[in-house]
Image (spheres, helix red, strand yellow):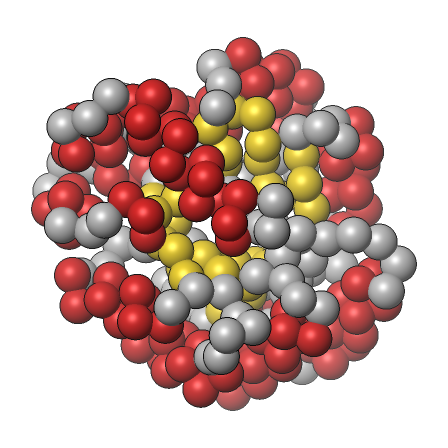
Length: 255
């Protein structure tokens, strides 16, 4: 069994064939798919999908850094409201994004810090977005870190030093996705040196499809491609990759 720890299957890119895409993932062994929220506009779609596939799709709640603006306080209030109403498996997708626009950097940092504390209060892991911002995000996580905090550094593409920093926090895994299969990404060399106990699998669907589908819509079924590449790097059977990464995901999500 595989776990996709990060997939946005509720996104509009799947409106024409969502059920087929999910059934395709299940058919290749991706039995659990965790769905990180984006903002208040995505919540209803997220809930609908988790209701339609209660044994396979699991909701997380959070405010994505790219959705942070001057109205972020009201967005955080909506998250707190829903946390009091139903079960979630993590606070996410949260973090810092300094790729597209740094206008709301201060607000992003505040929203990130407050959602980390919300996760600790509710005994939930966090799913961290760090595009062009690893050092900033890491320092914020480190400042809040204690034995009650754990989570996933989503879409890990960093250096060996970055990996060591994450490992040093104690309760965190690195999410490995399609970039692992990209030629010249360099991630393969970094991942070779990281113990499997620190890794989980993810797709970030519909984004970052692995080779040979790079540039096309990503799907949770492609977890198997990522796992096969990881098995090749580690020189072990893909079944062992499935077993270890599933155990790691269950540890993070309290299953």
